[in-house]
Structures are given as structure tokens and as C-alpha cells.
Length: 289
Image (cartoon, rainbow, N blue to C red; front, side, top):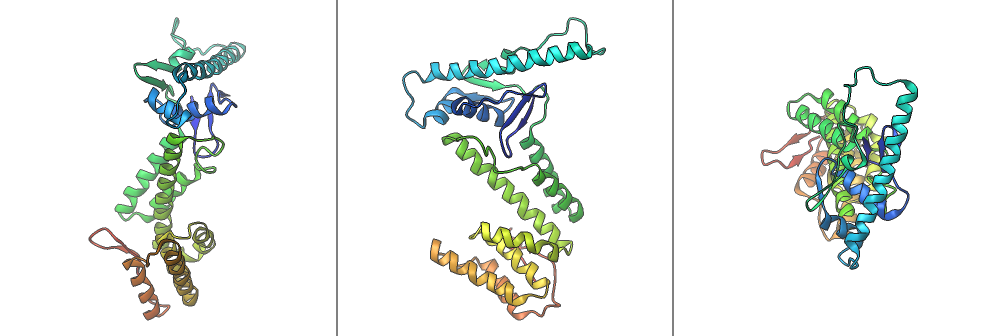
């Protein structure tokens, strides 16, 4: 089974979609797909579907949605088997080998349900693997590898997570968590590119990101640094002033100590003073000019 959640929901068995069009079964599949090969409690599914106000028939209705999903899986299995017969049986298949059924794929277990991926692909797992390897490359100072790995991880995102699913409490929480992991990977990939001297290449991207994430301090700090390194010190200082105005107006906050230090450094430094970004001993990001 192949599962994509970093964009539109797509779940395929034998290359055949088992994603329902009805909103409620789609929510159930989305939560099961995100946690593939793990038990999703009935209570979590009910909370997702009815937001703390389940009807008396909630469990029975949930079972109906599960049966609908199993029917889609069974159809995909039948079509896959038929296609296999037309193309010839797998010569390496063991005689009498067990054939997976819909109940083997969408499993009922005590307290919940489990969607078995059967060793298929799951884009969120691949994202976590690539991003984690990229973070380790950053820690080791291998910035070319970090930039490449994090770029590959981010390329798995084709849109917002579960872009075409009407999410409830559980999915909304998971969507926020996934978006935060994406932003962390994006932040690190941009830092790796800055360390590689790609500041001019980053300007267009950071212009869009600073507009989209109007209170994200580190993205704005990276934008300021890229502008300053490109000889555009006045524009870098304008970015700081716009961010400060937004933070004060919308959140009642001043920019962080690290960002204020960056602003002062840009004010005092000449365009030729371009050292690398660094992290303070306590872990706080300190972007130096």
C-alpha cells in the first residue's frame, strides 16, 4: 500500500485508489493512513468525526465507515489479482502463499483499528527519514549534503497536509504538527544554503516566505542576512522594521534578542563583513553578518 498525506490524501493498493469521496470515511482513512501500521483508538476516531459530541450510534456508524473502506480495499485487491492473472503469475511467488484480504489490511484490534501498509511507501515517513539525515549532516558541518537532503524532503510536500480532507479535532492537530516539521526543515535548508554562500539565490524565495509568515522571526532574520550579503543593507533593515511593527501591533511583542543583535550588526557592519551564521552555546540561533 502506498500512502501520501503531504498534500492531497492518496491511498493506493496495487496502484488502485482506495480513497473514498464521502467526507466522514475520508476522515477515518486519513487518520488511519497517517498512523499506518499503528493502532488508532476508537476514541480518537470518534473524537475526530464528532468533536466531543458523538451520537449514541457513533460506534456503529464508525463500523459502517470501516466496512465501506474495506469494500474499497477488496475491490482494489480483486482488480490487482485480475491484472496479475492477465499479465501472468509471479514466478517467484511461493505455491499456496497466503493472499491478503481487506481484513488483513484494515485490521480490527482490541480498542481500535490498524491500517497495514504491507511494506509500501508512506511519504511522511520518507520525509522524516530525509529530514533527520539532513539535520545530522548540519550538525556534522556537511552543508552541501544537508541542503540536498532537506531539499529532497521538502519536495515530498505537494501542498498543505491533507489538503482535500475536511479535518476534525485530531486531524487539525496533526496538520499543525506536520506544518511545524515542514517549517523546521525549511529553516534548516535555508540556513545550509546561506552557509554555502547562496544568499542571492535565496532572495526570491525569502521574499515570499517573509510575506507568508509575517511573524516568523528566523525566516525574517535569514531574509535580512541574505539581503545584507547581497549588498542591500537598507532593505535588510526595512525587513526588520516591518517585522517589528507586525510583532508589536499583532502580538504586543518586541523582536527577540538575537534578531535585535542582528539588526545592530547590520547597522554597524560594512557590506564586506560577511561571516557565517552561528548558534549560541545555549542553543539560541544567532545569525551573524
